[in-house]
Structures are given as structure tokens and as C-alpha cells.
Image (cartoon, rainbow, N blue to C red):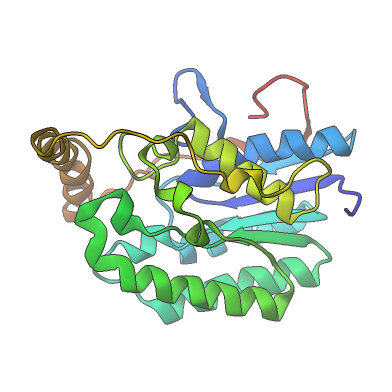
Length: 261
């Protein structure tokens, strides 16, 4: 493993940490957890997290990339694309262009960069099954770009555990605390952090399948509680990013507690 001293994370809600804590008590998330792992192996590590929920790939590139470069990271993570993919206006080529620009700029600046593919969202939320082909295509694009720019890649799409409902928050859009823990461990393995291997891919103990009626009720509740409000925001031109700023816009030392944010 390289010696890392400055870690910067850019991205959207997953990197911000939504699903792991809340806005009242604070969000932790996989990037904070990864920073803790990096700091354990690199005392003195500083960490910045520029991610803001709701942002599309172009917005991440436009609002976070230059700030990240100015912080001169020697390790960076980029997670983006899902907020584009789930919209009717999705432009795969535009997302690829923006991802390539971020990978190219960060690696050219000397940073070791890590990213990840996306799991089968149709297994997580049945309503998203029509988007499966988009996910497969986006993953292939990420892998090609990663090979071109020597970016480390975590592959959730290869491991069934990443669609286990316990890995996901109740909204099925964000990882649960356990999911964030697994992502952080996968990133740590990709970055060569001592003590991390493929244990993050291990299946969870079997979970009994709920009765058909319970599944139908849960699906209806999810549609009403999470999907409908998301659609309403899109119709009215609102975003969960409205009024949000990065939780950790500067490089700060790790404090030694369980929340780096």
C-alpha cells in the first residue's frame, strides 16, 4: 500500500453518508469509515468530503472536482452516476465524459483513485427492473475508464450480498449502516489497506422470504413513502441538493472518534 496523507471524497448521497446516521445526529457513511481505515494505517491522515446528495455527475464534476484538486489529495474516491441513471433524461455518453474528466484530472494530479460499479438495482427495488440494462452498460463504461486511467474498482455487481435487503436502508436508495461498512471495506481492499481482503463480499446469514401479501404491502408502502415523493420533486423542479453544502469541505485531521464528519 502507498503512504496516504490526504484523502478527498467526491460524489453524491452515498458518499455523503445518507443511510448511515441522520441529519440530526450526523451522517457517517462509507467515506468516513474508509477515512478511519486509512488513518489507522497512516497516522496523521487528513480527510475532506465534498459530496452532496442529489447531484448528477455533471454537477459533481462542476462543483467538486476543482475543489478536490486544490486540496492536492494523494488518494481520492469518486462515486457518481446513479442520480443520472434513474432519470428519463439519462445520457450515458455525457455521464461517461464527466467520469472520464474526473478520473483523468485526479490521476494526472498524482492521486490514487478508487471508484465502484453498481449492483443490480432491480433486485433491490422491483420497480427499478426496467433500468437493469442501463446499470450493466454504466458498469462496463466505468470499467473501461478505470482501466484507461489506472483507477481502482470495487465490484458490487459481482457479489449477490450487495442486493441483500439488509445492506440497504428502508428507502432502498441508500446503503444501510451495514452496507456503508461493506463499501468502506471494499474500498479499503482496493486501496491495499492492511488487514482488508474480500470478506466484504461474504453472504449474510439466510433471511426468510416474507409471505407474498407482506411483500405486496411493503412494496406499496415503499412506492408511497419514497418513490412518490422523489417523482414529485422532479416534477416541481426540486432536488434533495437544494440548500445543501459539503459536510467536510476542507482537509481535517481524523479525530479518533467513530465519526469523521
